[in-house]
Image 1 (cartoon, one colour):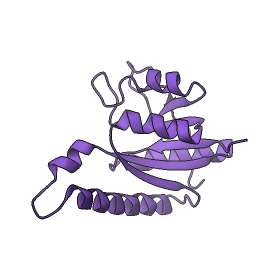
Image 2 (spheres, rainbow, N blue to C red; image 1 turned 180 degrees about the vertical axis):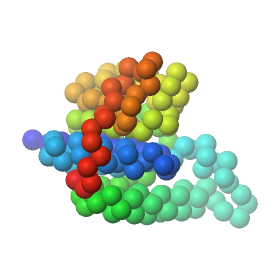
Image 3 (cartoon, helix red, strand yellow; image 1 turned 120 degrees about the vertical axis):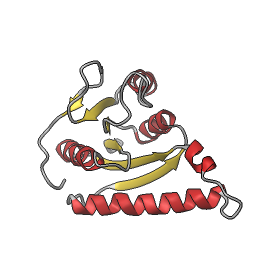
Length: 159
């Protein structure tokens, strides 16, 4: 039997801490593995290209610094057991691929990409069609027009 996984998809912003705390608490309650994911938009990597730095060097350095930032934040909030993954590509596609690969029970996202025109618009339907047993949650209070349920549990330290 596969180990349950909770995927925390985070941006590198001030809301990442709340998302990670809630995802870590959910993983602890479910006795699941926590996988922290940051998806780097391929367009951002390509637009950062210069004649002195190749796109592969930009990808490598972005992954290295993002990984370090996320591990530091996890340490700061007291989460000792978590995997960190920094991937490049389309946000929804990467989340769905990881949810399928890891047989994720839950995906927890922050609020910064929600909304009708946000990068997470339509993710719930796509995720459910590809991984029907995976539930999508938004960390914090969900917008009134969102169908994504909010994961508004207490912010307890550690996991």
